[in-house]
Length: 310
Ligand code: NAD
Ligand code: UD2
Image (cartoon, rainbow, N blue to C red; front, side, top):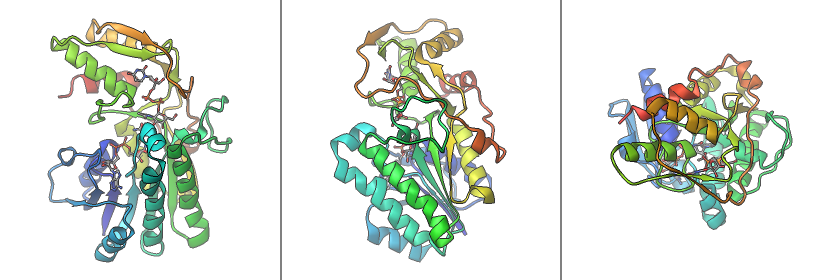
């Protein structure tokens, strides 16, 4: 039986697909290519790409009537918080309705269902590090949809016996993360600017606020390792897990590491702090560690890989 990866042509999804085919799985990728790219996918006869929109109920039904899936990794989403604020109804269809369509189709048919949630569900509550049993405060349509989806996902275990798990990603970085929007992951933007600068372009790094804000950055290969582990563990059913490294670092400290690796950096300009920005974020990862997970890559190793990749 095949494995379904929704959003498999996106940043994180494409790394997951790569790893699944190394494990000799046949992978069906469903993606509407709204932000994903076909070039992100490995060329392999183990990958079947279907262009489609998971917010169309008929499409999801047809997909499940045509294929049998052993596992579903549901990663497709409108991942931009800014877009969810701008277009709440449209993004809700992908970020929430589609989760229900996939869940309903999976009950009684699929052996494992893993859903990509987000640390955004914690909002701006101050207590750190974040544990899964702490209160949540979803502040944007994106965060509300992620939280509602994850409740449906984990409840599907209790109510219908679907082995389902929700994973709250903290700040993921790595190859193929698109740096083109100001709301793209900050590391992808920094690396893009450094590469341009090295190529002689007139460019700069912008820091919003004082640069002392901290985040828990996890390298994408470690995210993939965790997703596969969760999909193989019986103890993860009906549970929510944080996924980060368990430590956080400030933007200024990241710039120090980057300087250590590449020598000189583009000029740095400080801008006003962004509205809605949270100051600090850090995951408590004891729960996922108890299943045997530990991150393999240090931030510096991840940054080096990114800097020296194409
Ligand atoms: P991405 O935008 O690269 O990937 C999302 C993929 O979903 C894209 O390929 C896009 O084309 C596809 N997609 C969007 N709407 C679709 C639809 N209606 N039908 C079919 N495909 C659709 O983003 P990513 O960073 O790889 O994020 C993957 C998942 O992880 C998302 O659910 C995101 O919310 C979550 N997440 C990411 C981060 C991060 O740091 N990157 C943090 C928290 C959560
Ligand atoms: C992440 C998610 C977002 C949402 C949020 C919830 C990403 C890309 N974004 O936002 O979707 O889930 O968490 O809390 O994963 N910054 C700069 N210069 C830049 C770009 C960013 O200073 O050129 C700052 C930005 O203002 C913020 C920090 O860097 O303080 C991290 O920004 P981000 O967009 O990478 O991630 P975050 O945590 O704000």
